Image (tube, rainbow, N blue to C red; front, side):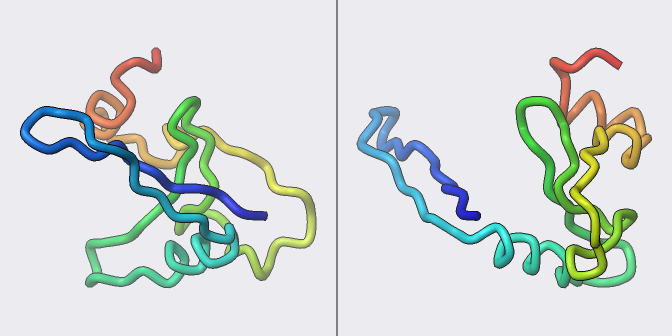
Amino acid sequence: MITTVSLPCHHNGKFIGVVGVDITMSDLLADVTYFSQGQSSYAFLVDRTDGRTMMHPLLPSPSSVTEPPLFIDVRSLETEFEFNSTVYPSIER
């Protein structure tokens, strides 16, 4: 499975194009799984539209999953109010 990561490019307030890259989901999930920047840091991957958690330290790693994935709302894993109001201001709690 492959996904595309893309962003619009602006220069002096004017849209000049788009930059993007195709990446396999296994590579993307591996980067998130093995991210380490100290004891207080971790990475996770969520669907921007509805907050479905794709990868999180509290979920089993992709190599240990033997059944189809269960998508969990990230707000079930990240319970701090500041997280919800900053990252997902449009999603009702």
